[in-house]
Amino acid sequence: MAELVFDIGMNTGDDTAYYLHLGYRVVGVDANPLRAADCLQRFAGDVRAGRLTVVNAGILREKGEFPFFRNRHVDGNSTFCEPGGDPADWERIVVSCTTIGDLVAEHGTPYFIKSDIEGADFQVIEGLRPEIAPRYISLELNLTDPYLNRLVELGYTSFKLVNGETHRAEEPILPHEWSWRAFRKAGRIIPPIRSLVRRMPPSTRPRKAEWGEDGDYNPDGFDYSCNCSGPFGELAAGEWTDAKAADVKLKRLRRHHIKAGSSVLWWDIHARLGSA
Image 1: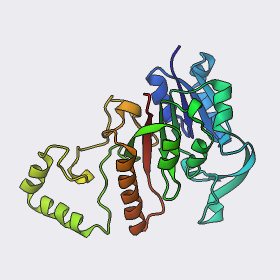
Image 2: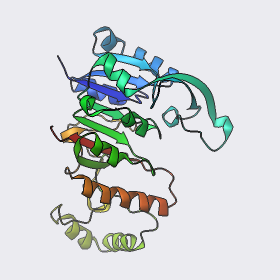
Image 3: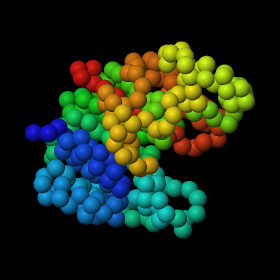
Image 4: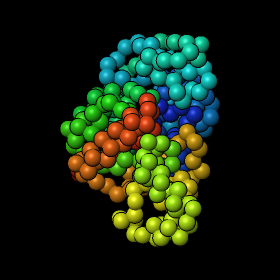
């Protein structure tokens, strides 16, 4: 039987489509009833064939009925977190929620969990236990929650931090990083400088995206949409690092995003069990 994947926060189902393409069985979970209904229609054949189960629920630290804020313009921004901005942009509904432990009890321990639920992702791993932890997991980061500590507690020993927009591991140059901006400008004014840097071995090249490969990372040629989380596990971009190195990079990312005035950290943390 094919390995099982949990797609938590399936949204339009584009990640689910990728996992089905790879041959996995999928349990797709979304708190938004409109998105769950759309996915049931989009993947009707896979549902009938038993390759996909769609669950209309939230995954939080405890079971119950909880308020959910559906963004009227961009469904992918819908969240369990109290939103700011114009109240007219949001519809408050109440949805049924379960825990990751109960989801595993019903469907089995997955090979991989993807979680992208707009600020509530830490609650997914709060409910995990080492005996039901998947071999691989990816979660959308935020600026505050202690993801790395919790993943280590669960037995994860190897980590990658991946840009959610490009699926690459290189960091962008942010507006306040004046020295990097000056170096980038010099390379654009004097093209041989940029060419020389890009010919350097990856291990010695500056860790900024400016000198990485062009385009989004796509090792298997799948037609990713802007809603996709991208490759996972061994195919995710970058080299596996230990927790200490991952912690250094995560703290740097958070520090620079806060300094740049960003309230969002659009990066994912990928983790691999020590026994994988």
